[in-house]
Length: 392
Image (cartoon, one colour):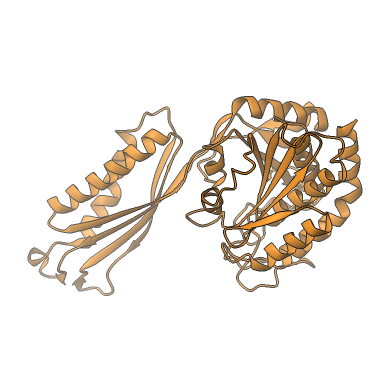
């Protein structure tokens, strides 16, 4: 039976892929700079006799053909970029790049997809269709590597009917997976607001417009965009996370710069909120005697898991792992550029448990002490191979 063979191969090869993960973890590269990582992936696909193309400079897209290759086409995706974080783990495979670390588990994702590629390549006479392997750059930075790959035709020639992606979850114990149909992660847009006046002496505020005071009012009042315009049953977050202005005690600055993020679970509300933010900011600032520039950098869309595909994947996972080891993914206001794919074709973005409380492996992603229980790699590569061979 194919499932049993894939499971046995995943167990057999897991030690090799743990070593691959060690290499990737020790050699992280920032978004859109994954040049050596891309070469490494290309070499591995060559070793596995898998043809590939290069897209978006560092993206690698491989194709594995099984029997009747046109009968079904499934895409499997992994991201490759790291974060600008100094690693604090005391491990043999610690990052060798100062200030750069795989703190979000993309080294794990890449490893699992390489593992799935090897398993699928070795069993290609036992499953039908074509599997498209997407090793993606730039998940951590706008505009998102997924959007660039889509513009370069990653969902065409051949066009996959569905796509799967996994993400480490350091809050979920190793040996477990989680799935959720429907909306699972939020959209993410960046806000950049500048409040301007001519500035002046702090002892004579009547001779100018107080940009500090105006920006302070704006920070508070922007929250009514959420509290009085959004459907209260639809999650949404607006956070101003940077307030920059002024340099001394007795000068009202000529400008104050604000930065923040806007998150939503509903795409229609998302863009309506953008209009409200622009209107509210401009009119409030004008009413208080200053000028405003508002720039909204439109980022990642909502991650939407196709209900039918998610249900099929979950059923396969329960058969593979045991029902007691498959949980429901919680809704998160975090964002992922997998949403670009899932807005185009049916997608399933699931979580891979990587925590081990007994070993102290519980640090969250985007922290300098993030690490995983590496037995999760066997699970991740096996599940991705299974979905590539059977799901849809």
